[in-house]
Image (cartoon, rainbow, N blue to C red; front, side):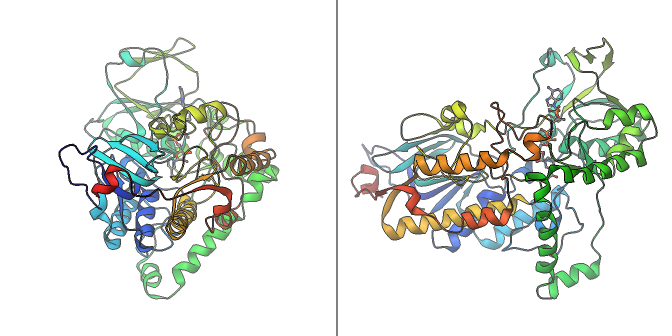
Length: 514
Ligand code: N01
């Protein structure tokens, strides 16, 4: 990256870059690698954490694994024949991202332990002015890969701040806390809790510890077809040409085959409910506990979870499932609405993330001086093709509105978006454009078509509340169709749907200094 030489009277010491990427998780890393390969090598990646990997570096709770099959949970351009299991553990996925980053030779442009504090569009210079905790940048484009599920949401419970014991969120596991023999309370029963509670249960059992699991709403949980890959399979994936791609294609096709049940024919999800009920019946004998864990809404309305270990953990001696709502937390206990007080040493909140109000939006200010958070607060998250936003020129949001999936791998979606971003960068260079911004009409048409498609989906009709829905009740998170249609929509940068601005001549002091 070019550096400005700080001179007396220089208006700024910003580092000029073509592209500033926020986040070094799967999204930011893919953007860096693909831009580099396209010759768009003048970029910087700003990462608040100390390494690559994003969610797979940060989420280290016991039992953290991926519930999407490993064959699909890698980049298409960096298959991994060495996955140990059908569903990969967190550590393995994190190590994979490190390896990919090293192999691609891009890490020289990554700045770790640094957070983006502010990004403001400068219309005159046609650049984003980006302030980080360690320096300033003037970037032509900002590509945000800040993560859809990255900012922990702490529960608002009366008295929780008066709790005297250790308290931490599942996504910020405190490994310094010794849980031996402790009474642990876990609040929440989503995907994170379903993975961590069975591991904790095993650890605590041998030391006489206990877990109270506080469930507000039960989830549908189907069995997990888990197994280790054999040495022969791994060797075959590595050496037999096309074999791993074929295995990957088979998993992909199976998962895509489920989409119609989610978006058009939710009654088909009764099949998953049957599997869920069998999963319960197999592990839990107590009819009262069975009733407590059986959901009363359509499967798929919330993310369907997969686990063979959750129900056995709940049925074990050292775990109690508490379904009475939490009234308050005291210095050393949780009190439920029925007045029962249960002592707690360590409080684990597995209560999810800020999804429909992504924190990064508060730090991004567009053409008219409003932050993205202010704009989205009015009507909910919206973006053209889930990626670009009217009023925010040259901003590309990876894992943006209506791009997430409940049924398959986000890496597929990320790669689709990254192709679009790379093509946008190429188009801008080729056509001498300084700024591109989707028209209001293009964004409106895209957004309303998506919302129309949400009508018959299980996320709307399934009778549950979930993080998929925003405060207006709209599903602004999920992509309502097959992932290959999403890819087709983003196959080329459709500049005709954008207001474009010719590149400004080199008039700013900064450019002159560059
Ligand atoms: O969070 P969640 P998560 N009092 O929001 C409960 C991905 N993920 O971290 O259902 C009491 O799903 C809340 O109850 P309710 C995946 O996409 C992927 O578990 O709202 N309870 C719920 O039970 C997933 O969907 C993997 O009634 C409160 C829980 O807390 C997403 O991350 C692994 C409460 C929150 O569940 C989020 O999962 C893990 C309160 N005040 C996660 N507030 C993979 O394997 C909330 N709850 C890829």
